[in-house]
Image 1 (cartoon, protein in one colour):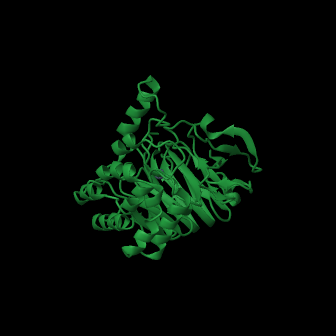
Image 2 (tube, protein in one colour):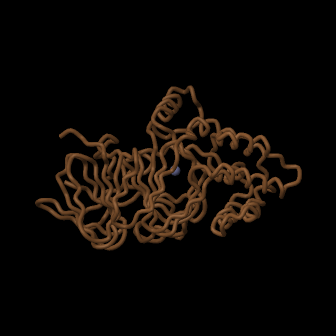
Image 3 (cartoon, helix red, strand yellow):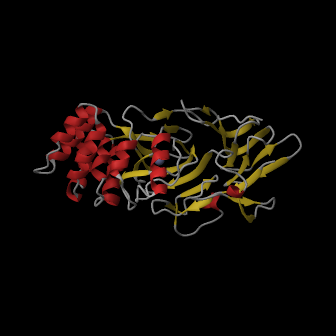
Length: 371
Ligand SMILES: [Zn+2]
């Protein structure tokens, strides 16, 4: 049958103070950044019994990554997460193997799997995702030059003009100083970016003026999502979530290669290998109730507020209650999930229907398992 889990909490410093309290089972007085629903060793989900109490058991003791190939998160960002890129399958497998054999001594990859991810906004959500328009990027860098006597970003601008954003990154990291980072918002205003974008750069300056990678943020496209809208980020697309609360759905991987805006280790060499300038974010201007099925995603997602959704047997499925109580109805049983709890069904569990009484995220793997 189906197991019910709660999320494994992560208190990363960029989290909103008590931002996930209504799903995490209470306030902690500190940042609450993520709740993890899945079997990833970095945070396997605790099982809860029919009374709603944790049992001391977790999901990873019952399933492996073949059975539960997805990781679902609730995420609450108060300030930008690192500028990051996720590796594709080949790079993750090779990188992880090199670490395991001792050929690579740095700890860059946490598992051998590709990470592709979808973020669905649960409220207004801001992100940097993919590359900014070429001309606008160049104008932005020129404005930064005009505000910093002696700064020469000509070589980086030449790379961008040729469509080689990747090539510009090491040049901008080398030119990065806290003084020029402090001109980002002014430069953004000078080239006519709207106030929300200028505001995003004010946050970058406030939180990351001394960060060695902050000067690459002018190259990133700004994205504002409303509740229910989503962005799909294939492996290889650079991004940084700025602020907001959302549901994230991804392959069961925690492979994050960072370029900047972080106190964690940065691996520019591996990030450059991971970035694929030919891939782009898929922004999905959908509404609550619409099916979210990004091209090439190994999952489909629907946020339901009312009504029913069928979750057929044969693939991994998870329903995460966000507001109100929802029911998971099987032929001969029914379970109810409270906000922050999720019902997990492996490919071998029977057909089920989700009956939404308040917002519930219904996520289904598109990888079918032979019966
Ligand atoms: Zn990411």
